[in-house]
Length: 172
Image 1 (cartoon, helix red, strand yellow):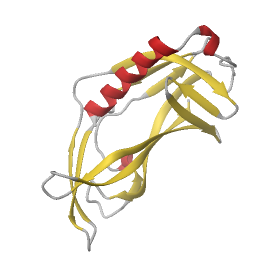
Image 2: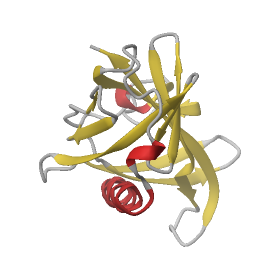
Image 3: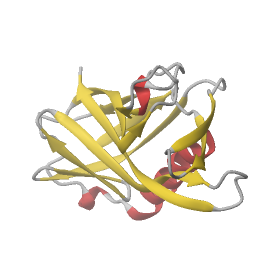
Image 4: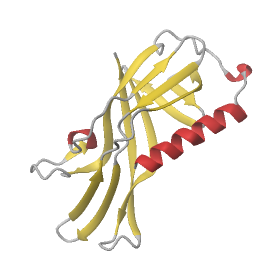
């Protein structure tokens, strides 16, 4: 997952420098978005009990014991900065489809903070951040990555299922 997030950060940065101009930024000084937003959920449908505490959670932050301090900072000039320390490498395999038994291999990132900055624009309740689009609703930002969580067969040779990952941020 760490590699995935790093690749995502690089892709967003590359897209922003090659596809954005000052003409693309509209209404970016919307005061409702300006400020610091903190990551408070990594949601997936149906959830998992990755930490084997007997409780299935759709928020993987409740299941993974890794340091996390991810923030988005939206300034009034149309620039958003990302600082993250939560980049776990997550490998999931289905051991038994009848009992929905999974194996989870989670490695926490110990390489420090990943940072980047890019332009953003707002259109009603949607925020364009590079090529990604997030939604603002009820004081939270929802950023969906389709098919981001991969579930493999038991020997990790084939992806047998994928799940969307929704990052949820709340304003500080």
